[in-house]
Length: 272
Image (cartoon, rainbow, N blue to C red; front, side, top):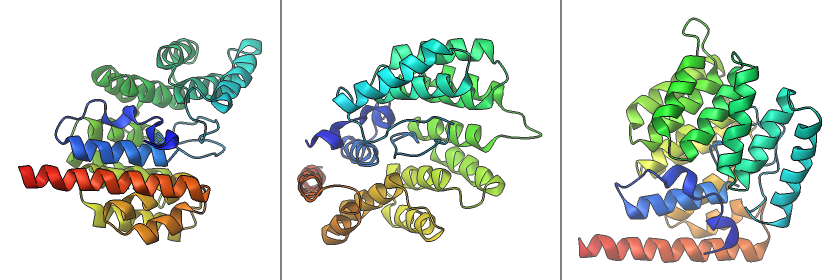
């Protein structure tokens, strides 16, 4: 399995048991995107849906990932109460699969800034990634204000419902979030991944293309689109889209993995 496709794959599929092949597809999706988590797997950007900032292309355990942890760790050590440092350090730790440490950084940050919605969303995301779904939902729901809902919290809560298999509730929350921030790429991306989880690749493709047509040019959406095209067997199109961000050798390795995965899925269906 190519290194980037194996990275950060466990976050969305850890609690999924309904379909081994579909879980593998999501593992590939969130690895190609970098999930998340955003959602969540992700791309290099200023701030994520949960307000986090970090290099998204770094594979856990790689030199780049460790450098990100060290860089943000130094900032956090110098100013541990600074919100940007709390979010940035926790995100770097999360991307390096140091989930326990990321959880503790965010837990302490939330103690100091109890009303902060971005820290709450990030904390809920890490808890969910660690498999603590009930606790994650409690954190996010307690931080939410029904009269003035925060779309980041709505998207984070929706992602947890998706991981629990409650796609209907998840999509309702994504739709409500989009009423607040129409066309928000991170929400559209998460909504598309919800349909991938449900094996509705046609709808997922439409949503991702809508995000791109709306001006979203980030790596996560392009690579998730490449994944969705590949899962439909449209490998030439998938390679073309993926090539915007990845070197040719890595694109070919990813496509080869998808082909093997689909072949195994086909064998599994025949056997059933």
